[in-house]
Image (cartoon, rainbow, N blue to C red; front, side, top):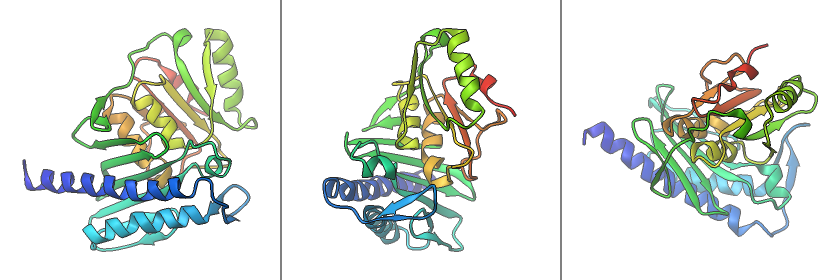
Length: 265
């Protein structure tokens, strides 16, 4: 094992420790009264978001005090280090508020803007999704892969889109014209929806909300998880998704379904 590989393995262990710390906060407060604030018309934040953020960042800072951290709740803590942690302490806040328990902690690590590590933790199922840039995607240390389903009529697709977006008509056309029988309309954590594709529980996932763009902390970790599980993640133009830039459209799938037809203006 090279020195860099040893460092990345240490980063993986620390990220999982941090994810567990944040996840424990989510579990501890799931039935407690929440303090809810509105960031804007589209987003809300709770005291649990902030407490989880504190727990996660404390673990990361203790292990890597020179690394930069970008978090949805505490903002950017810059440094001269080429390493940057990207944290969402509670992905799926609306679902958490409603008691749906489809929320997650997401942690990604970049080196000079290249993804090297992704961790998504689903505390309510105790599922730890992990991938290094040169390794497989695992769930609780067991390797997983995307499906090999190539028939759209048999595909299991997860959808999360605005009824006002033109994507709705494209999806409706695809559903009726191709005879798709298993379109599931989910909200909640975008990262967890992407993880369903990574582990083969779903064949594809489509997010389309141009008025509510997702940020790097929502999708960076899960993008690497899907890719290392053998899938692809595309933007609205059908190009490989830049998970470090805000996106109003995310499509992930195995390599055989040819869902790219939904991309493009």
